[in-house]
Image (tube, rainbow, N blue to C red; front, side, top):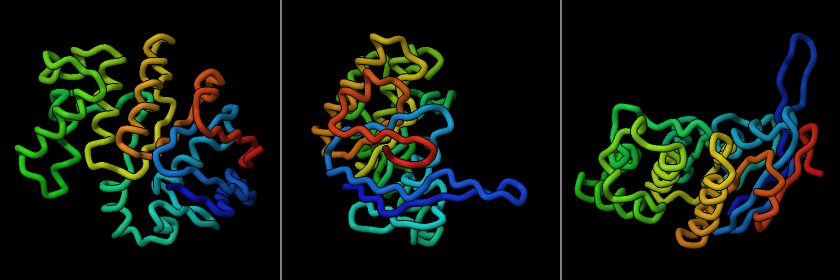
Length: 221
């Protein structure tokens, strides 16, 4: 589960302080697909970066799996991000010179699994996300946008994270493919018992989430 308490993030612009996130409280149970919506500049990406431990808050708590990641030292955060949090990006961020299978195996390189175990789990995950077996050895450039996003989702699940954060996961896809990806995320939340939070500007996607958070000027409304 995810619990955020009185979360704030300030940035300095010259002598002016800008509060990008302002006293946010939120709770998402384990295994739930949820969304964050809001206009450009509302603080969605900043909030996602804080929850994903890519940045540290000015004040507040971020509790994931009963640990406050806001107070973790950097030395522990690297390991925690690798093992407990999965990221899915609008631009896929796949390694272009690796195959689909190798891209999914990559996060497991640092977790002590043998090559056999890595390949076995990667194939299972690619099957779960619906990538055809004949495309496992293709590089990203030989896959469609929807197929690349499936690989990115499988990669995010590789280390059995407690939390998956998706930043506009359908932004580069047509509406039909985007809906397939959203259906996939909703099903994986149940199947893998993973908490999924997706940032989106699309009200149609937000309406399909169990919980939707609306962000405006750094505050939840």
